[in-house]
Every structure is written in structure tokens, then in C-alpha cells.
Length: 318
Image 1 (cartoon, one colour):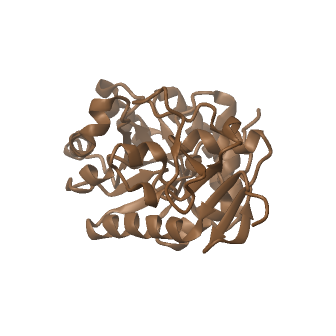
Image 2: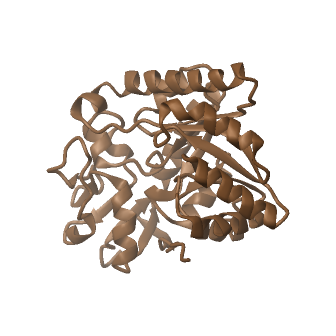
């Protein structure tokens, strides 16, 4: 390559990361849901599904529609938006995605989505978002879902961030303890006679701990395909596993790419053969920067350019 691309994805590393994560989940009897926030590209989402992910997670109805048009047919809108103007968009997306569910965290979202779905003669799956819903409200939200036309209870979803040096250091125990709490909530619902088919737990660094907890059905993770410099520095992966690097003169793309447990560091030196490049400390903000700055992602295998990926924009508008 005569001119070094601003952003490179090493395809063999990427595929190895995907395979390793999926194999660990399969060995534990869990499914993987790939959160596209870490890359925002249709091509990588397709690659993750082809490699065994049960589906993807997105943040907007527009993203769900775009991915469905690209052949991704199992999608969860994994953010509990409260805005009433969004509810018809969610229902419209559900009519275009063969398997669709969305996160909710309050009664108004359940009844609002239910009303919009009933008006279109359809039904939408919802997952109670344990990160945002008050713990004491979860049972009432589940009962409301069961009693509301137009929605059905798909399950529950929890996410355990690693925000401090202690949490990232103790990531296995953090993941295990959090997964145990999520499973306990599911059992509380079942004890009340409410079916809870999906028990989803989120996070790449905490996934090993969550995988060891019986009752978890799904791991929702974003960074596992590319990984990043922050995870490598924390010992959650090897530096040579990080599949995405940025040119040393493109540090503007790394604005805001620090990990919460190390907010002063936005990038680290990449591992050979990319030692003249930078590894983002946190992969998720990078995709947004690539999108807003009009950059592209060059995909390489054995030093040869094999594809170009561009993150997609997917805002919802009322």
C-alpha cells in the first residue's frame, strides 16, 4: 500500500477474534448478539452473523431497517428510548425485521409501543432493560407487558459496565456477579408465572464471567470482533489480537476514544506489524468519528487491501 490508510482492519485477526468469542459462547451453551455500536458497518455485522451470531443489537429503528435490508434478520433495538414519536418507528421496523425486539424501561414505553403496534395489527417483542429500569419496578413492567395488547415479553437484558480500574481488573467476577443478578430477576418473573425466554447479559470484558452462570441465554457484546488497545492494556486480550489500527497522523479520529477506567489515554502503540500505527483505547467512539469525518475503513489481509467499509448513519427522525 503506497499511502497508509487512516483506518485499517486486519481481516485474519478480526475473523480469529469473532471465532474465538463465538466458540466460547457456544461451548457454554449461550448465543451471541453482536452490538454494531463498535463498528457501525453493515459488512462486519453480516460477517458476525455468518460466523454464528444469533443476530445484532442496534440503537435506532433506522439502523434496524438498514441491516434487515442487508439480510440481517434478528435485531434487537438495545436502548430504552422514552420518546413517544419513536414508537411508530419501532413498530414500522418490526414489520420489516423477521425477528425484532426492543428494550423498554418504563410503563409509558410499553403501552405506547403496544398501542402503535395494535393500530397496525401487529405485535412487538420487548425486553425489560435492567440497567435503566428501577429494580423494584421490573416485575410490574413484566406484568404490564403481559397485559398490554400489541407487545409480548421477549425477556430481560442487563449490562455491566467496567468503569473503574478495579472493575476492569476484576472483570470476571464483575461479569459473574452481574449475570447472577440478572438470572435471579428472570427467576423472580418465572416464579410469578411470567415466561422469560431470553436472559441477555452485555459486555465484552465481562463475558467470561457471565458465560459461567447457568440461566444466561445470550451475550450481547460490541468490542469482541475488533478488540482495542484499552482491553489489551487491561489484559482482556493480547495486543496482537487488536484488529483495528489508526494512522499515526490521524489522531483526530481518536478524539474521545479513552476507556472510562483510564480517561487520560485515547490510544496506545499498535502491535507488529502495525507498530507505526495506533490502537484506539476504546473502539466504540472511533466508529462515530470515522462516520462524522467522512473517513473509511480499509480491510487488509496479509498486507493486501481486500475491501473498504464505511460506517452507516442511522438517526431516527420524527
